[in-house]
Length: 99
Image (cartoon, rainbow, N blue to C red; front, side, top):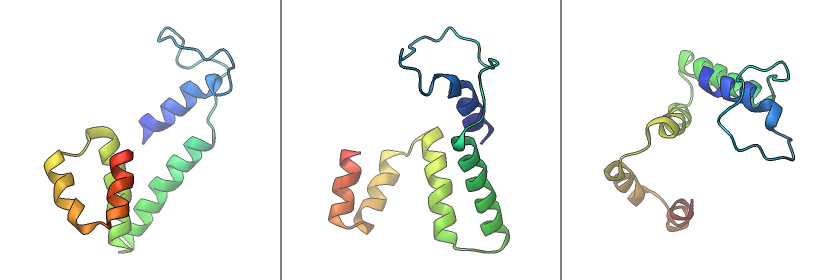
């Protein structure tokens, strides 16, 4: 989670920059950097996941959120994705293939 927050803070000064900065050569924590609603949402999701898991909440929702975070970092093996596909409606599969 801290990686997402750091990315939000570092990128905040470029978010509405009309010059469309495309360089890797910039100061990470500049005085113009600040947290945004993206940091707030990251913390809110983390808090919700911890609360749900501590209280024995909706396990498939917890797993879906945790799985999407894990996918962003590690990806999903094609064999595992293929095993999940038969459980989906055809329309859902089409959306996933386009995504």
